[in-house]
Length: 280
Image (cartoon, rainbow, N blue to C red; front, side, top):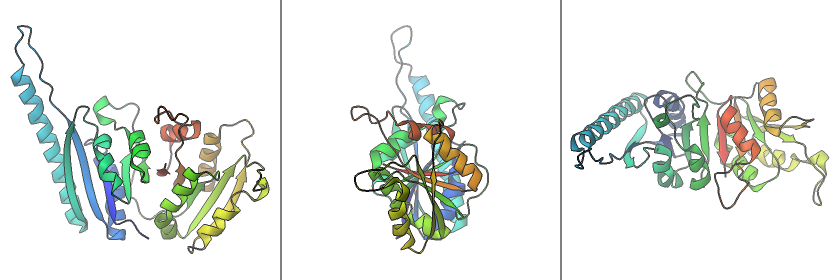
């Protein structure tokens, strides 16, 4: 198994270099087809004080969107050609100008999507709805921290957050190409409990065994939260262990609103310090 189709969500000129620093070497190593995807907002006709449409203003916005899309496309194509990566550009328009929303359909037929974590201090047009990408595509999403610097070589030490759920299982197996590439991984359990089918003392042993059968050197670590949030426990372990990739399931608390996240998921989306692969 390897990733053969990769979708890079490129929201703006700010995140394009960071996302491509991950996506291009990643695509080259996997001999994958890389899709660069960007959306611009649709120009909305506005009425003048006299009641007529502001045609000039709308035309100006449309021209600006076309210019920005063309510039991003040119950078993407130039970088792909330099890396000798097979590529494709998809440009869209939608009401919000959200590239993640426009990328949902493309990501559903890809092996993985790569996007940047949102910078909370960036202007609105720089933010993409990465939550929708995670929850609506059924595909793994690799998020790059907005603070991350440097070109991404293969991960060396992934951390797999494990709680025995279907979301955690999906993430662990979705990440197999990355785990095999690293050759090693740590499985982390937090506050494991005794259940009808498993003692807390052996929680995580089965997934360790399953991943080891893929040629991965896997270790198991159990932690107790001791008053901390589980998100803080995971973050502390990342810092202490030197792990450079987090693999975890994404959880929602409400079936009515799939964008209401569980505490750990939202915490990691907001505070991630290493690239994070999430699956739903």
